[in-house]
Amino acid sequence: LISKNVHLYTEMIVANAIIRGDRNKLLSYKKISNPVILQVGGSNPSELAEACKISEDYGYKEINLNLGCPSKKVQKNKFGACLMQEPDLVARCIEAMANATKLPITIKTRIGYNEVEDFEFLKSFVQRTKDAGSQKFIIHARKALLKKLSPKENLNIPPLKYDFVYKLKEYFKNDEIIINGGVKTINEIKDHLKKVNGVMIGRAIYHSPYFLADIEREVFGNKNVPTRSEVMENLIPYIQEETSKGTQLNHIMRHTVGLFHGQNGSKVWKQYLSKNMCIRDADLQKVNHIMDQVKKTN
Image (cartoon, rainbow, N blue to C red; front, side, top):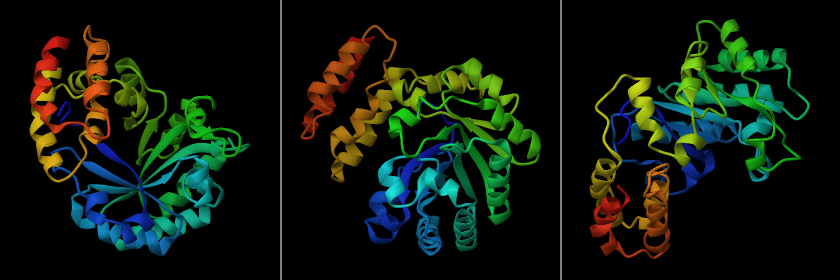
C-alpha cells in the first residue's frame, strides 16, 4: 500500500513444509502489483525442486534460496548459513531448483561464516552458485557466527563489511548484486546504489514501515504516496476479507505497530493496538473503529 515499486520477499518457508503442509496457507497471498519473491529453506535438492514446482503457479516472480539464516534450529535441519560450508551441495540444490521451474532462482547469503571471512572464498562461493544457475545474489555484508551467537546477535555483532559486496560487484560486473545489512537512511541507500544494483532492507522498514514512503519518493521518484491515515483506510477491506477467511486479526495488526513511528500519536497507537488488536482473540468489531483511533494519532 505504501510503495508500488519495492520488491517484497516472503519469510523463509521450508521446502518440506511446502511439500507436506497446507500449501495455500503457506504460499497464497493477496495479488499486488509489486514483484513478490518466495524465499525457501532446505538442503535436499529433490525436495527443493519439488517445492519450486508446487510454488510456480502462485504468482511469484522468483524463488530465493536462503543461505544466510544462522539460527540453531535452522542449522539442525541443515539449511541457512551453515550451507556456506558445503558449496557443492548448494550447487546441486540450485541446479535442481533451476531445472524444476521457469522462475529465476536466486540466493541470499552472508560474506562468510565462523573464522571464514575471506573475499576469495566469497567470490568462489558466488561463482559456484552462478555456474549452478543462480541469477541474482543478495549479500548480507556480515559473516555468520554459527555457534557463538543467537540469530538476533548475528544481526548486530559481526561487523558490517560493505567493501566485500562492492568488490564482488566489481568482479561480477554483469550480474545483479544486492547489498543487505544495517541500512537505515535514504542517503545510505543512494550511496550503495552507486556501487551495487540494489539494496535489501529488513529491520529498518519493519520498525518504521512508513520509511517506504521516503524510498518511494526519493529513490523511485513517485510523489503520489498515500498518507499513513490513507494506508490504514486502504488496509481495512483487506483486514475484513482476511478475517472472514479465518485469519486472526492480531496476525495482521501486529505488523502495523510501527506505522506511526516518529509521529506525535505513535505511543497512543501502540497502546491501542496492544490492548485491542494485537491480542490473540481480538474483537473483530473493533475493526470498525480503527479510523477513529487513527484520527487521534494525527
